[in-house]
Length: 207
Length: 212
Image (cartoon, rainbow over all chains, first blue to last red; front, side, top):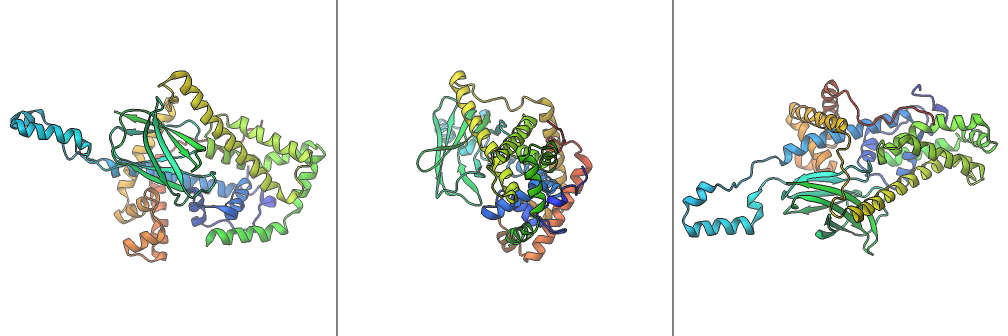
């Protein structure tokens, strides 16, 4: 279909398409209210802007996918060395065991992993390594704006593994699971302050 | 702000652009087959794009078809009082489709959890080809990101990964607003150019113009 086939239905005069900044705002879920309404109505009939948003989405996902491993892949500061452990005196071994059990951050002291939970694509599952600190970002697109949200992460048996209350920022929720999660399958559930379940995501933690 | 200016322009132009919508709505009300065909021609790509962006490519043709049936039936029942509001009405229907599907997904996952007890997570890697393409594209994207200039890379990471505001980036990197916009635009173009040379396959074919 020619690019301007819907020209008579376009709600804009020629050469008045949204700016690059507007496309970025929409792609990142930062647009709200009447501006969002008007933009999405325009997007329904404008192929040029559909392609612009698709390109911006792809660029953003590409950069996030490329940047995440480089932001998080650092060698652990501490590795358990059995030979070293035996070489230490008994008190030293007790200290080592105590440190390993009480301060899990020493065992996997690497930069946190950024995980974004989005209500798109239906059945995709986010995946992250076990016991790695997680910087969780939850997409609030299409949800009612509330003063606060409650996030709970439960394992496959329904046991609560993490809870937090947080306020939205730029249509997103940010929280950190400092100690990460053990390996397994999880559900991240978003609730209103009144306890209504708003959205659910799946999260896979691999050992 | 850019979004507000864009919205004002849309509103002004819509006031003088009502004729095409009125004619289209009238055809659909009269059950004119040309009307349905025109409705599909005008909106199918946009509806498909929206649904695919929010729900993925699964069952996309069916969802697009359902959307048009709902819109046409609503018009024939007289539920669209102002033809000029057709775009807004279609948008509302599409958003309801997305919300309903998300709710279904949540209910399905819970139902599956009840049945499986601990094996409730649907295998996200059920399409090996897409998984392989995604991993390949990630490797390429990593190489491309490493190959662009350090300042450009920092701007992209701050803006897209850490989602820092323009003001914060300008303050911390010592840039004016104009410098920031230019550098960001250049960084995006460079990343896109280098990536396009290597990445040729798309995962989401939202623009396949199929008719139901």
